[in-house]
Amino acid sequence: MRIAPLSSNNWPDDTLPRAESRFAAIDPGSPVLFGSSTGKAASAMTPAFTLDPRLAESTRPIGDLALCQVLLHDDSRFPWLVLVPRVPGASELTDLDRASAAALIDEIRIAVRVIEEIAKPDKINVGALGNIVAQLHVHVVGRFRSDPAWPSPVWGHGERRPYPDHAAQALIDRAAALFAAA
Image (cartoon, rainbow, N blue to C red):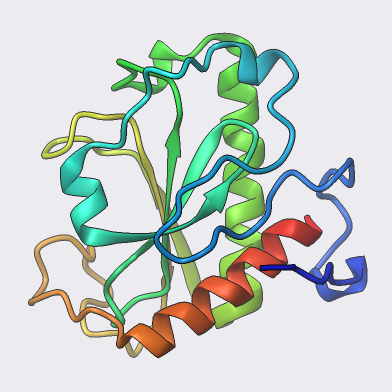
């Protein structure tokens, strides 16, 4: 699948780094690494990384940034991305070396911009809890004053409502294009 980059004026500001594209979409059902795997942040990654099955069960793959696998949380009630650093054994932010931790913050900033562009939420929640799934992962959740959980946390509120396949694919394509442009 070819992704057409968006111009930088599609972003709320130009504070994001504009190096080579670090992201591309993956074909449905085919999780493949995209973007540059060079640099200090990537040095901590090894082929031994595997996504926790509980994360795989509740998400749909979008693609990969330099450090993180990017997933769409499959709950149509909330615009929700999950970033999973491809660092085997990492369960806490402090498990990352300095370069990887800095890369994670940068990738969170990009994910926030993607959610802002796609959903125009009232607020964006960013969190790394890990109480149920120990594998280090970061939730980036767009929130609206009108959403079913507002102002409480999204966790444990009602039943997850998976996206219809066509809606999920449209959202994945849009998110992938925005990540590719970042």
